[in-house]
Image (tube, rainbow, N blue to C red; front, top):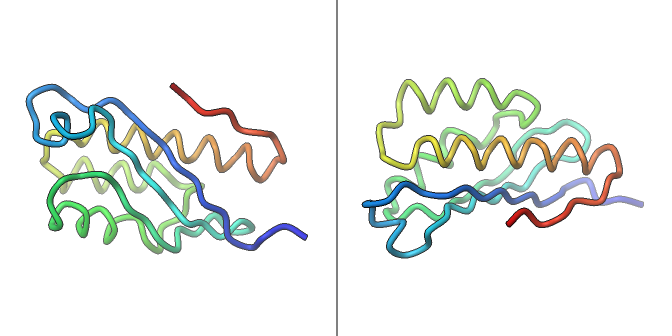
Length: 111
């Protein structure tokens, strides 16, 4: 029997010239998702400051991965950090992996 919760990660290149790039070169987004509904139960990312990580969590937890456009809209309207495009890209990757997971398709690591 499949677990009710699944972990999904997405990565995206960070822009040059920001602290996170000096540390990681890519942003990692990790989400714990309800398999059957798509609701995001927990979320984390590799942004550097605790404030940015908390802001990200507050945006994604309780949202639905099937509605990534809603999170993108919120980020575009309220997140003015340099990593915004990378965060959105990583969330879209998570959405694609979620669709594959619920369809039973094996996912491959994206380089």
